[in-house]
Image (cartoon, rainbow over all chains, first blue to last red; front, top):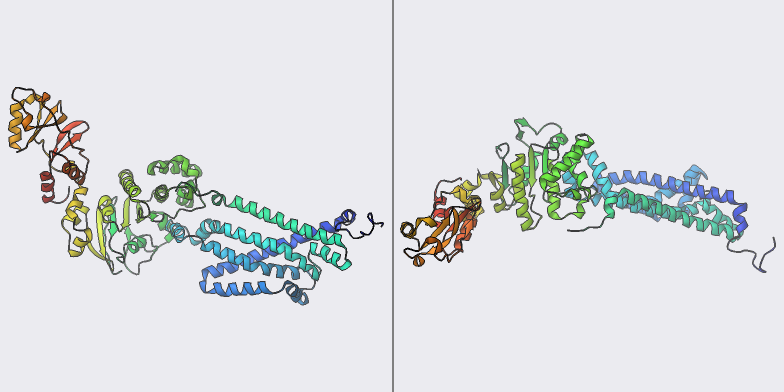
Length: 226
Length: 349
């Protein structure tokens, strides 16, 4: 291939790469999205359970917080490596650490959300004859939703970024493009991987933000006339 | 709390009052089992409610609390519909009921689609009452329902509660720490002492007129005679015509009636409408009463005015008498002497 402008064999993006490698780019993007969704979904399910325990048995709140915070401090490169002996270079080896990283943010926000429900609202719900399950589902959960949505946004954005690191165990969606570029000192796949990762994070963040607003119409109206 | 025995008459308002630590709120919350009594029975319509499913019991008991506790994520309509929805009412029935209740508690229909945070404190409290009444429960529990609003709104909400009660006739148990509120709204007042000891359980007037002991006397305050005046209206006492004559009666009659009442003033009416007061010195033989100078306008009260209000008006009138304005017509005269005499008479209007 003849460089167009003298000594510039390695531009930031070589556009024909897009066309030639489109299949691979598309696959990487979808894989990236899948890893993110699996990891955050798993993280959310585990966090919901942990939060329920922390809220129900107050004494467990501190230990749960400690464990999730500890998981968060483990360097990602190390954590991805740890599971390979058990699950191989599989998707599971990538999803489990990614999910583990979401726990601190999600548990903290879910617990804060439920704690934000005022005691008199709870008393009114009980006093009107709501069963505990109905109160949690129809009153406390909706009121905790703004906090949960906030936590989810942070978790998703940080997970999209972390997924790229999973490339070191052969997963990692767009991360593989980046790694590929690094290995070959070839800018194009790196740039494409990084930019698409950023765009994916922004898109998912916007999506959750929108869904959150739709779910909490009451929180969108300002206080007035008091 | 030790032991407490209270019999609450159906369709009446009973107020639980007492110093902090007297267990008034605890007592209230035992009725809907937010606090489970360790022993004893609580009966509603002869049925012991301390056993059986608690959620179902609470749906049959309206509950209003001081901080209202509206659900911030639901519209006003949604808040009011809480219990009907749990009871599985049809959509149309729920929405009809919401409209009916909004009207009953005086809420603008346009507020129904708003969220609680968009309403004033007084409006929120009305929604709280509407929500409690939604499924038409026979019993309504109110825990310091007007404690969080300013005095002007509080007075209005108390008036509204009484109007509402006249229409719905619920059995209401209300907790307050405000003796004036208790005196105003209660059919009977249960005055509790620290530890849940019932010091007196009687109608408001009796509580003021015949305090059972020193604790009650101190709790209701030194001005209990004045407070009693608030419980009665002008129509409750045997007022009289006073030194008042018809314009057609003539000066001679006016003079004799003034002597009878030892009054310096004589009131003049025409076709049963009070015209004003004439001073004795301004009366002239031979001159028609109607043309005598009426130097003082009448200080007026209505038959429905409280005696306290009447007293206030009499204090500021030159003639030491308030004229009863009965829908535009002269109804009689109230004096301090009459009011004082009424307090000495037996208790109860």
